[in-house]
Amino acid sequence: PAADPSAVHAALVNNASVNKLSSIGTGSPNRLLYSIFGVTPIDTPPSANFTFSCGGAGCTFDGSLSTDDHGISRYAWDFGDGQTAQVTACNSSNARVNHAYPNPGTYTATLTVRDKENATASDFLTVTVNKRPTLLNIYAALSSTSAGAVEVAAKLVDRFDVTQPMAGQSVVFTLGTQTVPVTTNAEGIAVAVLTFAPGVVNTVTATYAGDGFYVPAADTDSFNPVSVFPE
Image (tube, rainbow, N blue to C red; front, side):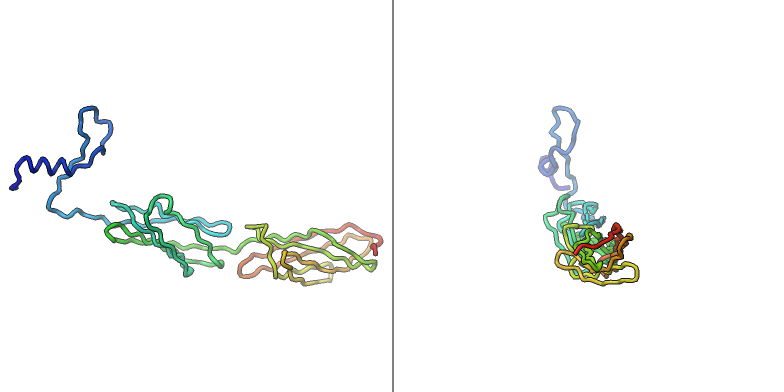
């Protein structure tokens, strides 16, 4: 109340935000006046909100739906498996982070956002990570003996990355009453020796039972009749 008109004018104009308005015509100084003096501006706490999607080897978390009146200064991610991530200098690009869970299961992911006044807010979502699909393929009869002993080969791979062989896994071959378990080698290949009957179609099935990380897989292949097996 004690300020003279020139002081009030200076306070209003000098504290104004420039170029905030559009389509106002020519001749306007285009200033948004600030008229609250002697009162601490109100800071609204942030709002935390995120989404996620999972596929392939991992999940993508997106916190860009989080808001604050003066901007978010930090995203703090807790993925629920003991792993965390911190993002500062936040913008629409780094609001997204990727994370690969080490094992299938159900996890509670948490996003905590902090604004420039150190106010915080959190959001929680449940993430379900499924077992990874597999592909098992019987691809060749490698060799045989005159007694009908035939080497049958199958390869086991991760469907999310077929270039990734699955070594050390148990594959069971069956032909009639024959059952032969084999462990895959470093290339994900299992080779079983089975006794084929001459003159008939021999149908072989390979089965992978799966484990805590991978889903089961199976393949069946029929081999044409052979009257005489080569030496």
